[in-house]
Image 1 (cartoon, one colour):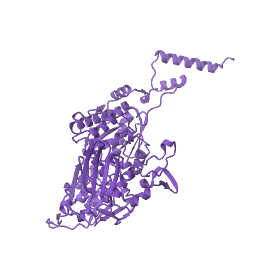
Image 2: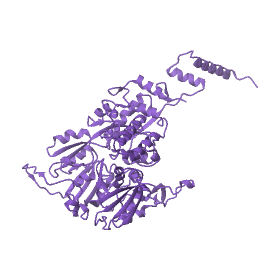
Image 3: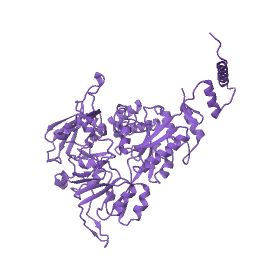
Image 4: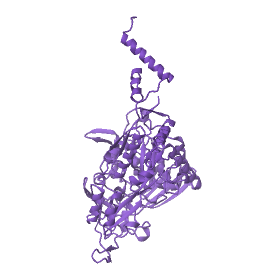
Length: 617
């Protein structure tokens, strides 16, 4: 073997010397010098941790983008390479809820997660690979699974304690970080409808309870009865004008419009109370085999196309929502994977409560439920009942241009225009991206029901003949349309910056109600380093919720640590007392204490190189 070239021998000696010096601690090296020594020594520094935050743009949700940008600043100061990617609402929900293509996301979660049983689908590991708002975080925690299951089977104080333990475990392991519950701010005209403050404009049932018995004459100031041929709603969300599929995830910010078009067996009066709606009544029985219910439909119900609604439609709806392919799609792969169900993502939680459902007469349906209490079983009655004669034709594989789209079905991708529902309003016309018009359905049970048979709180059919939804490009434009008498109410909540504009207009009423839909930072726990709960908990400690409440929401929000904040289910040790009781901010007044931040990440098993946070090998 020949003698190595002199240059190679010199490099070898230098490299060994450097390694010896580093190993013995005989030199103190920092900054760029350390980088050069690593190159000479022949080893690379660990790569910096990088995270991407996906959220909505400012014109779609100014709060979300403000939260995301401030979070990015805190993460960057902590040594994490961070980017913010705003995107259209449809694409955001596709990437987060359907494809799991994200690190962190910032948005509001639906307000349906305000009772303990709804957290089952949000957090149970059985849904960790499911699309939609079924565990979009990919979160798996056996203790949480046990707590979610046990709270379904018990009542009273035993259940309260189970729900308390559940929230404490979730707060400690942080699959998401709740930021705050914003105030929903709306502008409404005072001259056409009288009870804006008494109804909930976040719910379709609020729209059905609007009263026009009193109006104020703008010239005389007198109070008179006023006609209501049209309820004019202005919205900053264009999606309902383009898609009316109640099963769609990416097109549904909420279920308000489809809730007016499709009835469910029951309606949620409060998070703790579900009462008959399309059903005339229901009765529950308990046997050694479990819990079951008999549901009786109202008389003379019809779909918007005039077809009678029967028990067969109900018996079809539940297995269809559990598998929109109805067993007709073979999933590629092993034999065990074939014939996998393709559920409707939006309704997996309530549908999972139902074991079997069968029609036992033209208007009678029997349900068998999983192991749960009657209170929880009633939640299954909140899904939209679908017309069998329409949706049974949508079980085939979805295709675009003749090419099949994964395991999706036609039911999940159809725009569903025109829709055939059973609600108090029916479809009349639309212009995609601009306008949607619904008209009163004269054969709805609200129109024909006697006062004794009406659900409590409802006086009869809607007090307007038509409901129009017009799309505005911004919150300010939406408020201006109401001010100019081009709309009666802002159907989507507007930002705090519009409050002075609303307050100065004599014909406008400022409607402010604490939202039940919080903003949160969601973590993709399938991706390292977010797989580590200590890492997620440390990120949560970089977030100053009190600072965000003032800076992002201008004070129109309440910070919180649990989706069940402000409900009777929140334990005392999770109440907000000026800072997070589980992940207190590592700093003061929005300013990070970098030394404390670095200590926290080191305690979580990470290290710093050149002020950059890196993973240890």
